[in-house]
Length: 245
Figure 1 (cartoon, rainbow, N blue to C red):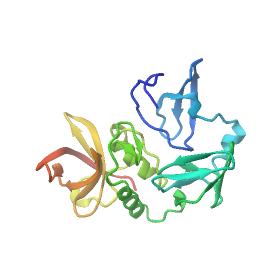
Figure 2 (figure 1 turned 60 degrees about the vertical axis):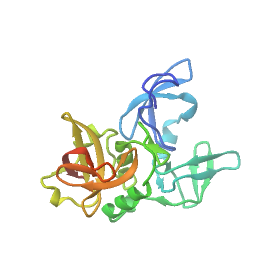
Figure 3 (figure 1 turned 30 degrees about the vertical axis):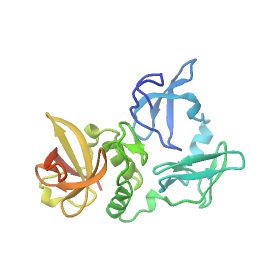
């Protein structure tokens, strides 16, 4: 999704396979202005990358949705195939195939049913660690490149919790944790610079945090912020911690 209706415009976020949008404006060119239904983000996409649904089709695609838990995995029908990744949605999934309006696609990879996740904290940590060393990409939301808030948003999505897209908005979710000694694995830590929230990470055990900064990495966390051992300095100043799980 781009800020303006042109290929050269800044990428502000990414849509993953199966995520639903509302079309706000269609141009005579290849571009459409859309609103993402999972986080209300608004921007421009190439019209050729979206599939238009009738109301009945849209309602059907809300049923039996699973979330893909593979870095990259193919889905295939007799006519076509697609490569999808972590966080992609497969509706009307029966354990073998997903019935989409444009075909029935076989999927053989791992998946998660968010409503069936019992221990959300444990699952958040497990999923977050799978992204280790994924490269940083402004606006990204996949293992092939993602930013700090995109990383947190996708991990939480996979356990059934929808978060806003940006760290500055995610900070308003959940309950404030007064002391860092009270945090639990899976909680979120927010960081600020010059009074502005600009970074977020997922808290692990033993005073550690996993976050996207250059790449998805694990660093030490204390009441001052994130301490980067390689650089021997604090890279991010702690603003506050929140519990959402």
